[in-house]
Amino acid sequence: MKKVIKLTEEDLTKIIERVISEAKEEEKYEKGPSGMRAARSKADYTPTPKESDIMSDLFGKYKDDIPPIVVRYLRKLGKETLTKRLMKLGMIDKTIIGKDEE
Image (cartoon, rainbow, N blue to C red):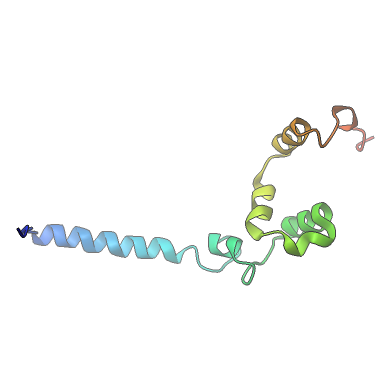
């Protein structure tokens, strides 16, 4: 049994506007300094100066093996949050925190 759907001109207009709107949303994530696609693909990834520092200082010779999305995550992650997580994993000791600033 076939189902018949009747659409008004207003319904069609809304559907078309929604499709156009969704297409525009996808366009803003194309290659660019802050676009998400640029953060996921190594081919068109251009790191910010802070991201370059994270890659070289934190990962050293393995910086080319780290996906851009991980570097973006670390850049946006707060220092306090990162420190707490590293302490929880036992990767840093509470006694050494703040000694570098002296």
